[in-house]
Amino acid sequence: MSKIVIVGSCMIDFTCFSSRFPKPGETIMGRKFEVKYGGKGANQCIAAARLGASTAIIASLGSDNYAQEYLKIFKKENVDASHVQIQTNIHSGVSHITVIDSGENSIITVLGSNNLLSRNHLDNSINLIKNAAVLLCQFEIPMEITLHALKLHKNYGLSIVNGAPAMKNIDLELLKLCDIFCVNELEAEVTSGISFDGKASIEHIMNKLLDLGCNTVIITLGKQGAIYASQKDRTVKKVLTATVQPMDTTGAGDAFLGALAYYKAYHPTLSMDECIRRSCIIATKSVLKFGTHASFPHKSDLPSDLFI
Image (cartoon, rainbow, N blue to C red; front, side, top):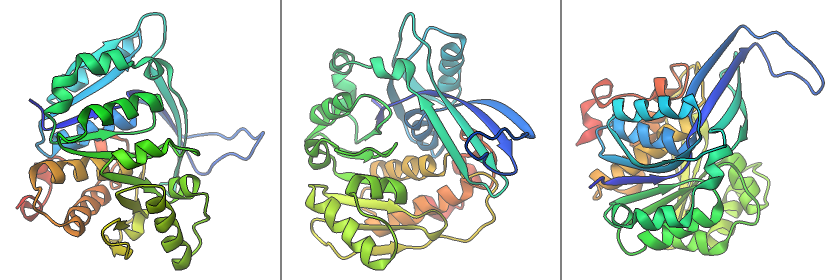
């Protein structure tokens, strides 16, 4: 059985590269276009698999050529895709990504077949879910499906929810069910309803998310690393990461989540601080290459002391 199970999305990424973002109503010339395979669920699954994790994904693809290509990718990456369903008469999920020279990106997503992932599909995969050391979910599939997955997995292992894309009015039961709730700065603002503008608001946001019922909260800060706190210890702690010149930040958050799931599954005795530190190193490594899957490092690309 797979030690890490992802219940999440598969997306096809259509990426334009340009010097800057266009203003509203403006057309600008880009310099390159690529079609890649992404989606937060699939990305995080592959990121963990490249670190040596035994992974499986429960997801929904459309009736198009992209779906068949994705199944080939999962096979190549040693991901168990036997629980991926193919939907008829609907396209696979797609994302339009713009990457500018600074490495920043903006993304528009159309979920397509991801919206059709069902409770029945999860029920048919119950043994896979219950046997997972770590269950990893995101917000690119219907909220009720994520909630159902967490209920099926409760008391069987550790669960991580990546609150992306940002969403208001999250079901509080979901926040209470997951063991770790991980978001970036923008997602933390939207979820908490508090602006992120300094140390005081960081603590305010953390306390608000914990008050909503989260057990442990991690907020990733890009080049500044990450912060975390928990119900047991509400003191906000910061984990720094190395400063680099990024080429493309697309997928860095997914690299972090995949790494975090890996460490929780395979190195469960590591402290939270150390899990986050190592995950930040792997996420930082990913921004040095273009693309999503292409940027995720293999275990052999990384220092051996990250795996002891």
